[in-house]
Length: 188
Image 1 (tube, rainbow, N blue to C red):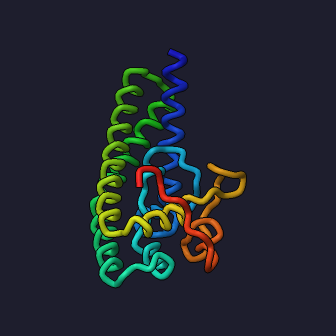
Image 2 (cartoon, rainbow, N blue to C red):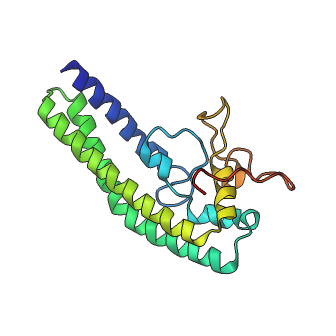
Image 3 (cartoon, rainbow, N blue to C red):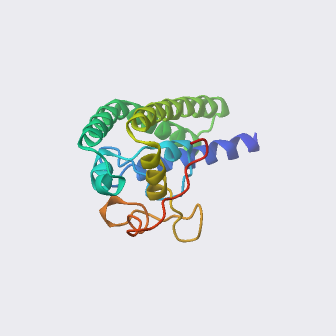
């Protein structure tokens, strides 16, 4: 019983971070990949927003056609994600209420945890679908460069919370002119 409570609380804490995280810059969900701290799978797969691609267009050497396609994909995906994230936030809120309420029913908490997990899984699936579309637009070199721009470790080393640099870039902004490109991601 105690283990279930600890697991439920840990899950609630991770899921509760999503609304705070979603208040950041970059669109209706504030999704972006500036920091390397990824405390949930949803945070790990959240794609960059249209505004980030606009800011990175020169660095990534995006063509006009690529920029237009990326804007179209991210705009459509934002609209599709809105009801999914609303459902996730509602499920998270219900779980938090059940865990911290004056009465505690482990069956209810487990049921609400399962609903929150399902809601997060739906959001993750939508993000992966968006990444599939984004990756079909970018060249492999652009994808590798994007990874270097969005996945840089922040203060405290890999996994540290780096935050966004001015201009919506990863920590520190774009790489300096003439800097070597980051190595390709595994599997590329």
